[in-house]
Image (cartoon, rainbow, N blue to C red; front, top):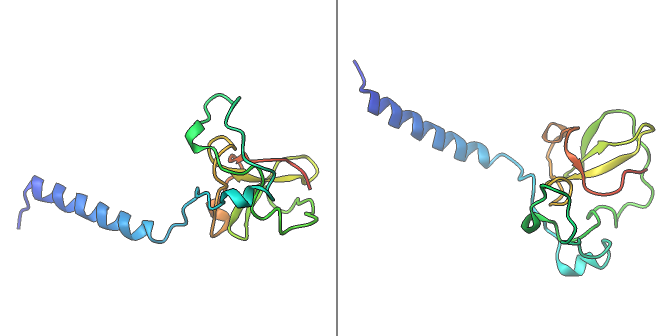
Length: 134
């Protein structure tokens, strides 16, 4: 049985659409900003939208300066066990020589906090979204 080239292309495109739709249901969106205006009062205030670094998209700047988990965590220890990771659904990376770390964010660190379901969703080349400390 010989299949026409157009039939093969159509079948391939349908397979990609179906596979993409199936896989997208399994993926955690990496950049959603779930904060609201009330949250910003306890998260360092609203994120400034002026004087942004080059290449930052102003419409994609997150709402609040602080990370949602910052208000629930008192002391955060330095970490030297791995260069990056996923904690409570958010990505972080080591950013200092002595285990200092930061939460990571999209849009060159100015956008939504990067979300994850496993450490493999995070990367050491992601941008810090706030202070680098422990």
